[in-house]
Length: 155
Image (cartoon, rainbow, N blue to C red; front, side):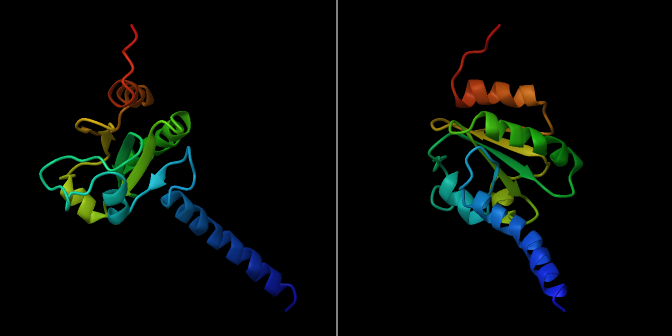
């Protein structure tokens, strides 16, 4: 019995730790990491389509990239590590969000997401830009640099 209790405690810690870490990332407490958003969080951090149904009003503090994905989607799984790398590279400059279209149907519906992965690039000012399908890391970097950070394309 004495050996079972420590084993149960260790197993509980292993199971609960990812939940706690995911909650911290979801709450935006991990700079340089991908942040998972619910529909309500999306409305407060990116765009509130209920408050502004006809006009794009960006709610964020820094430009962002929103990766609309599903757990079963193979191309989504291909770009997931790229999004992690981009979050680290652009830490403090651009926030990388992920929205699960199976769980957050309100956001997917508001943006008319029909194909995934779909990636929304949101500058602080101006209109957002959407891409559909998996792109290369270099393509994502180019859009971030040019459209979100205003860097000129180097030849």
